[in-house]
Picture 1 (cartoon, rainbow, N blue to C red):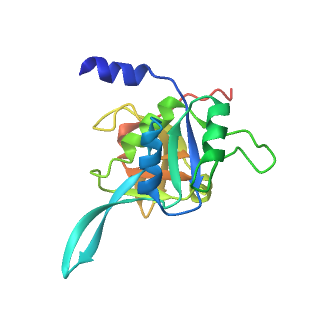
Picture 2: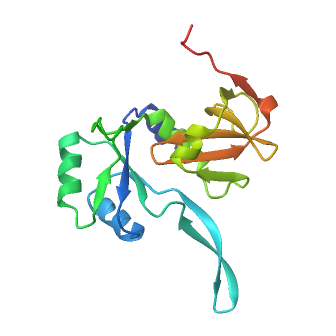
Length: 186
C-alpha cells in the first residue's frame, strides 16, 4: 500500500479541466473509464427527499466540469472531437487557446480538499475565487498539514482557498495553523 501512495505522490503528470455542455456526469465518467482515462469529478452530499424520506445523496458539485489526467495533447484533442458528448478543454483565455494545465501537486491538493466527508467547506466559482483577497500560505499544523493555498476570510471565518480552472474550494482552517509562503517577487 505504501508503494501505491509513493507512486501517486511521485506522479507529476498534469491535469486538464473539461467543460461539459450537458449534465450527464455518470455517462461521461463511464465513457472516460472505458477509455482508461484517469478523471475526477468533485462530489458533495446533498439532502434529497425520496418517497417522503430525506436521504443523503452524493452529487457533482458543478454540473458541467470534469478533470482529466493529461495524455498527449493530440490524443486529448482527438478524444474531445470524437466524443459523443459535447465538451471542450478549458483554455488559458479567449485570446490564448492553449489548454490550461493544472500541475499534479495542485490537483492532488484540490482532490483532497474536495473529499465529500469533510465538512465546513465551500465551493466558489473561478471568478469569485479570483476576487478573494488573501495571503499565499502553507498549513503547518493539524489534519490539513502540508496543503497550500490562499488564506481568505469569509463571514468572519478563515478558509484555505485552492483554485483550479473552473472551480475553487475553500476549507475552514485556523489562521494560526498557517504560515505565509515565500514568494519569488523579491
